[in-house]
Image 1 (cartoon, rainbow, N blue to C red):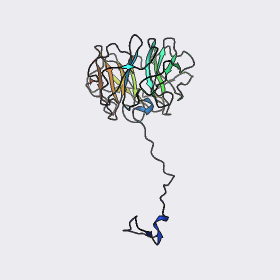
Image 2 (cartoon, helix red, strand yellow; image 1 turned 120 degrees about the horizontal axis):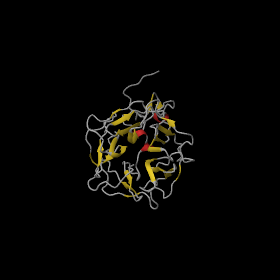
Image 3 (cartoon, one colour; image 1 turned 90 degrees about the vertical axis):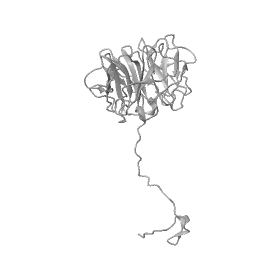
Image 4 (tube, helix red, strand yellow; image 1 turned 45 degrees about the vertical axis):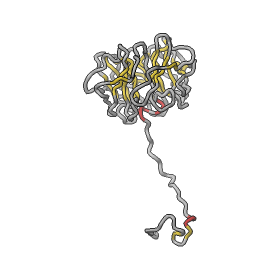
Length: 305
């Protein structure tokens, strides 16, 4: 093989052959590395209006479901507007949001007291459909609380998990079409349980590409159970806080609110403050939180999404 140096790519000829005879080809056996989207997958991102920023939604006691648009800097808009053009969510609890049907728009799911699990399809413009349809063929979610939505088993479809009264954390695999597997949920714990844990949230807190679960104890501890990427989590949790506690915080939500590539945690105080604790990207959050609202408050808002 001949070796040439100091020859311009713009030369008329290479080795007496016209330059125009040469064509570039890409070797087609090269496989690019897979890129894992942040926050446990793009489908789990709560972006109702499609602007690429994480929003927060919540329910009022009269059944209104409002959304506060994220500003992408750790704050949200001072006023919320209705996600539902008609109807209300007065009898719906344990609300979660994600792209359940795979159309690239954020949907809302929630359960009724009779155990139905319904989904309201997102329109991609900050609203959802006026009527919901069943994600589950029966009424098996009556005893399940603290619903979570994320891709726990790594198949690219959003699953739903929830806690039973005996402390089990069960997962129902998503089918990618707005429904979940009709079989009984599978246990996400090899041992241990979440009986004394409240306000569960799910996301990739430690940036390993697997969805973790975090939750609060009544004494204010905030613990994280690392996801294994196969629909299970570690048997023991560890503290996400170097100091301080979450005893007075409720309605936890998780997302990359400040757009730094790390998952944060936000929550509400009884006086209506909405605070955010910045994620460090290693499974911990900052010791102090700061206000996400320039004005107004969330005192009358529950079931934050």
